[in-house]
Length: 278
Image (tube, rainbow, N blue to C red; front, side, top):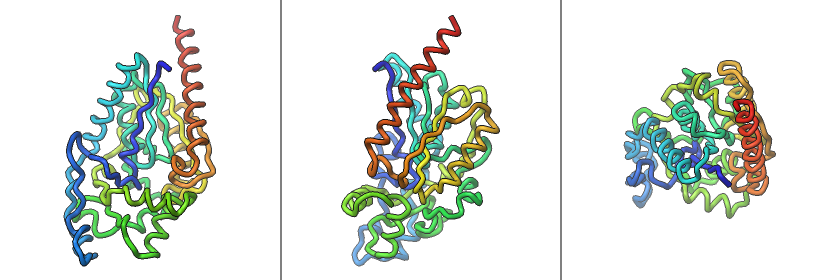
């Protein structure tokens, strides 16, 4: 296939991911996390080592990957963003629209121009979101929203599972939670979305709605779709999965089929557009 996919799962809201946040750098966990006996107060107060990571760094990192993928495949890229990764794929679409065949939001934050992720999260349509109930400490003081994925508190673990892994097995949940980084830098939630009709709006966009979602409720997903469509013009193509926040774990075959359908549709639309131009 002449096209490529790029995935920004390292930007997940739930994906306080274990992988590096900067090129080549390590995402250090708070030192208090590993101390025994564990001190919850110290963990809630320690400044995040990732506090300085900016949304611009993420945008540039993913933009460079898109450029590399496009050059290697001699084609355009379909960029998929899950959860808070939506902020990054929006920014990349604004930056390099000519390199993208489509952008795909997988229960992602598709934030209207001029707004921040945090502002969207405070909208009434997001009022049932469980994610904020997991946050530990003061984000302004520690420079990040922090979760305790390794908590042994049963009530907290039940909330974590309900928020992000509601339809996966206990063993899959335990493994996924063990891979999470505890900190999501504040910059991604505070950076205003900067998308325009002429650049971002020129890239076909798809949204995979997850109906059992409790981190980004379905009402919130639909609100973002409608708001962006009104402001940018055009129409977001929607797809629906009866899944929680993590269909790549609970329904990988169904998710893969949707992505392949998007690929085929994108190629068809591209061919039609080329035909009209000739």
